[in-house]
Length: 101
Image (cartoon, rainbow, N blue to C red; front, side):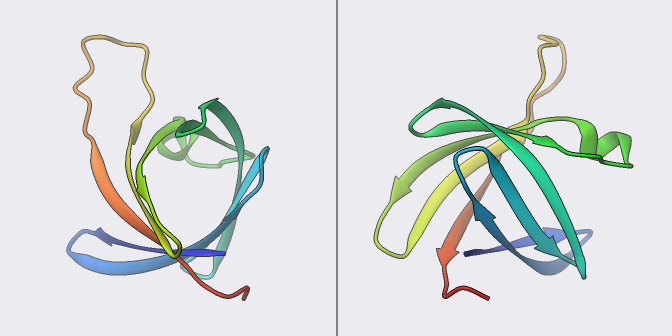
C-alpha cells in the first residue's frame, strides 16, 4: 500500500493505493476506484479506469517512475493522449510506502 498527497483546487488531499501487475486500486475521498494497468516498460505504465462514470476520469493516465528507494518513489503523470495538438500537462508526485491498511 502506498500514500500519495495531491492538491485539488487549492485543497491538499491524500489517497492510498495498491497496485498489482494488472490492476490499481485507489482509495480517496471515501471512494474506491479500480484501474487496469498496462506496463510500457519497467518504469512506465498507463492506468485505464474501470467503469468510470466521469468522462474526465475515462481518459487514461500515463505514469513514469523517475526514482525509487526503500520507502518512496518519485514519478511524473499526465493524461495519455494521441492528439499531438493537445497541450500535455505533466505533474510530479511522491508515493510513500506504508503498512497495509
